[in-house]
Image 1: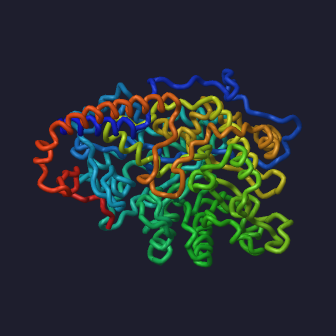
Image 2: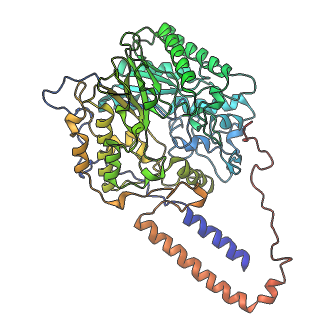
Length: 594
């Protein structure tokens, strides 16, 4: 009786924890007013306003050549079959070959079991980053084959055609530092055919009419401790890179190797910009970082030409560069940009904002560092009235996500795959009110980051081009185009504010209903101390039935327990006896980072 009860309760708990699975359908391509979308090839225009800069309006190819779990969770949800070279895919996996390809097959999850081991976070999980995904394979040849499936299939030419048709001008492409084979002893990195597919991408873009701006996204030792540096740490810091001169020198060598290869592969007509290093953490020493930037700038322009566009990260604090001297020379620092990434999902305060508070935070940030015009000025820091004639400003990462923390939500996604064989909310549908706000949120950010009235802003890149599944739908630019919450892009030379209205006008027209705000997590506590995402009414009804069933079973069990208490209690050796539970992979903790 108790065994059956325990099994039922466990099953009910799993049902309660996992977000619901929608029907196998997508929302129709409608705009926020419920009307069919217009042809995306028609750019938004404003009459007689084509007098602005050639705005950089682009999208990131995130999760492609530097893989990230929340973008491609199925690529990391490997099984006992994968590590033996018996490759298979989950339904809807974006890294899979075409359905009719000879290698394509669905995973048989009765035979292929989740391959999870200990992580640095003292629990069991699928590989958490590229370092550990590579280490999961004992055979590097098999690992390379699995990685190459992703590189070959995640980005396709039709994706790029659609970006051009939507009105975008640029693509930002994150690259790892090992893409040209700079892999040292005891490093498990897999280069695979990344460079080959990057060259293929550039050739596609040449024919389509898009400019490519690669960005060095990782560094030896990790410049921030994020998973997007290739290896995640339990502490976010620059120290793994910045405290080790050999890692800085190695990074400069990598920048030389990549920029030199771009030139030698005859890609300079397409690759017109380069990002020197993505998101070094804020504890990097400013003077040392500035010296690195000077050296990297000289190397890149020596290889790619004096006019190549260079963008550099702001150490999560752009105002510290606004000192009245940094990169102001219009000759030496023309076509350079200080890059700030703007997100509302990584702080509990912004996650819980109302819709109008979100827009207001874009238009009138509470912190100076959240303002695109916080740098850079010729007369800084005293007056800040004359914009820099050298370095300008850009936001190379931002998104429409506003109320769910990716890292925390990802835990439920990966657990759902392990338990159910499908990513939770894979076919999630965004409600009309949510899509309406997303449109306003996107428009306000396009306007704010161009900063057309300041002569500082030069454009933006949305993060990111596509997402695997619906749990992180608000990050999915392609989906936004389809559903109408990404607006038609302004014509080149026309400021976004001349099309959508200025930031305050967008704010005034925003519906302030809190019904679309489902802040997750509620505070800054870790995911295991929090409740699941706020559910829809349909899910709440489902949950109610589950709890009614649990209550019925508990009442029935209690009745039996009272009748058989002596017999049942006689089975216990002690009130605090422990039962050993086998954890898959616990005896082989190969995911613990060294």
